[in-house]
Figure (cartoon, helix red, strand yellow):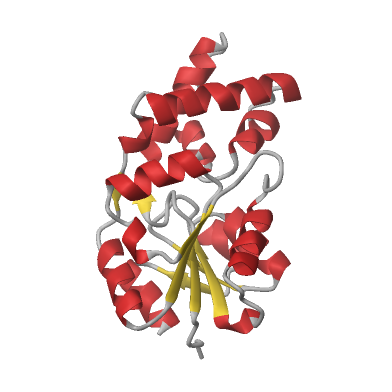
Length: 217
């Protein structure tokens, strides 16, 4: 049995938009500028979704100071050189958002992107009008996805967590939702895949945006 949720939190990359080209190009740009050999595309795809500092630090092995510099360079590419627009809205997503709005749901973006990057994407693709609140990451006060989710819930006055659900495509979306105490919907059309989302403990899986609608009505 699924629940009728009032508050629906959406990840951005891999859930609302397919940003893989811009993210891969951004990582390639940074890695080249920092004098390393660029991994193949299959390896770079793993970095779509998680916080940048995690990808550069934990996964690529940059020490803290270099990882911070790499994040700054990535944002230069993404925000100033057009990387954010190397992107597309997944088919069916805008209809999903319009239908949920019409049903009176409160829609919230909860993304590991910074504020500027998130707004560039949402403005460019005309998606911002569907959302009541945009919760973004911050290197100091909201560095983790769980921090972003808590910020979103507090800002929107959500006290009954049974009325909220997190929709995302990667394990960190699901794990953060679990830590907060939210149900989660793992979308299979993004970058994580069934095995990753199942292992993380997603409450539900959705193959399409229409499936997300069915799980939240």
